[in-house]
Image 1 (spheres, rainbow, N blue to C red):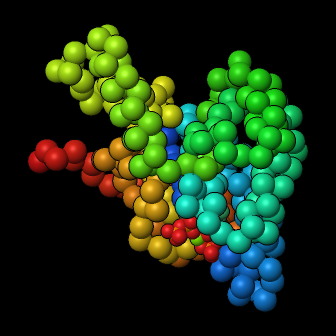
Image 2: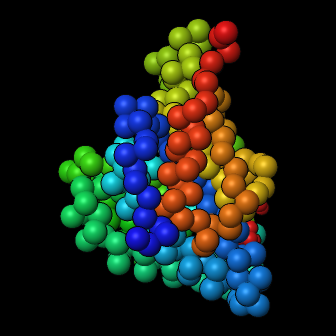
Length: 245
Ligand code: IPE
Ligand code: IPE
Ligand code: MG
C-alpha cells in the first residue's frame, strides 16, 4: 500500500467539520530549501491544492475555503505575482472539467476586480460551469483581505442606513455576516495553516471567532492526504466549548 493511502474509516463521519479553511503557506521556503526559484514552489503547491480538493470531496466536506492570494501579496515582486496569476489561470482551465464531474461548485472570495482580465474570465467560466453542483463548495480566496471585506460590509450597511432602509438598532451580528463574501457559507469549524507560522495573516477574521486552529510545520507543497486526515482526527478529539463550561 502506498504510504499516502490511509483508511478514512477511522474518521467519525457524523462529526466532520462542514467547512474547512486553509492558509496554504510555505511554497517559497519549499523552493528555497531545494535551491529552486520560488515559482517552482508555487507550481508544486498547486498539485497540493488539487490533492486537497479531491480529498475533501471524498471525505465528505461541504465547504472548503483556500487562501491562495492575499491583498498584501500584491506587494510581492512583479514577476512572482505574474507567475502566480499564470498558474491560477492554468489551474482554473485544467481543473474545470474535474470540478464539473465531481459535482464541485466553484466560487471566489476577494477583490476579483483587481485580478487580470483573463483570470477574471476563467473564474467566470468555472463558476458558470459548476453553478448547479452541490457536492462540495470550493471557495478560492483571491486578492482577499479580511479587513477590506469588513470595510466593504460597513460601507454597504451604512448605505442602507443612509437610504432609510435600515434603522441603526436593527444592525446585528447577522447583518454584518450577510454583507461578507461568505454570506451564504457557515463559519469554518477548522482552520489549517501550513509552514508553522502562528498567525492569521488577515484571513476570515470575523468568521473564525470560534474556529479550531491547526498549525502544522509541513510546507504546503509537502502537505499530504494522510496529514489532512490526521488533523481531522485530532480535531474530532477536541472539546469545543464556545465559552460555556
Ligand atoms: C504561500 O506560500 C503562497 C502564497 C502566499 C501565494 P508563500 O509564497 O508565502 O511561501 P513562503 O511563506 O514564502 O515560504
Ligand atoms: C498568507 O501567507 C496568504 C496566503 C497563504 C495566500 P503569507 O505568506 O502571505 O503571509 P505572511 O506574510 O506569512 O503573514
Ligand atoms: Mg508565506
